[in-house]
Length: 214
Ligand SMILES: Nc1ncnc2c1ncn2[C@@H]1O[C@H](COP(=O)(O)OP(=O)(O)OP(=O)(O)O)[C@@H](O)[C@H]1O
Ligand SMILES: O=P(O)(O)OC[C@H]1O[C@H](OP(=O)(O)OP(=O)(O)O)[C@H](O)[C@@H]1O
Picture 1: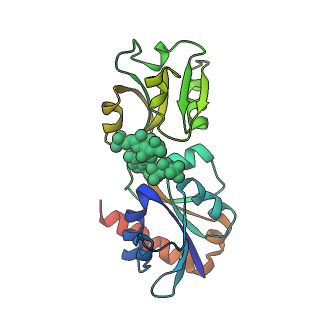
Picture 2: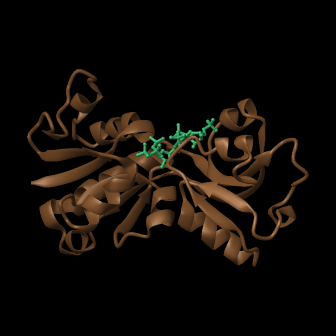
């Protein structure tokens, strides 16, 4: 049976709405009293796995899920061996460099050589500063990254900005954008090539619905 890996958190509601429009109902994942991590859609056509966003490409790469929905930021960070099929156009955010408003830095090139940059996205951060030829120390964090500059642990952060509210409310400002991100439909490459479970039909429907919503 076709299996779809769905991301917990920010992208879940929109992902479920999208799949409903193409005939797969995983709305039980939105019921907070339900603790099941694997469900069959109400029409019995497919299985859904509820996993952390960063783990979606893992299930798809290993073939336990033929399809998945995940942020482009996660794909840039993890570089999994998956087929990237459709830009779903929701879950917009950007990956940015931010510093304290009160700091003297107004561009990443103003940062001191060997300064510290805190991030959950260590590979994206490392690649970016490497491309600028600016040697910095990347400090890995798992969340509340904004506390890096606030506490003085780091000069800057590389993190997701969506509305900009978190930066503003913590006295930080964006000084550069690495890239923009939206949710993507991904597939297990071999299943995609072999059209397992008539994947191409579902993918075509997702593409159609996404384009119709532009
Ligand atoms: N304001 C936002 N904050 C975080 N992620 C956002 C935001 N807007 C869009 N996204 C997208 O949603 C995805 C999931 O974000 P979410 O905050 O749910 O998980 P996370 O905190 O990044 O991961 P986890 O909780 O698994 O460590 C991100 O990878 C990104 O693509
Ligand atoms: O621009 P905004 O709309 O304010 O959104 C950006 C915030 O959202 C994300 O945090 P998240 O809620 O995922 O928490 P965490 O990364 O600190 O765990 C990100 O790390 C920022 O802190």
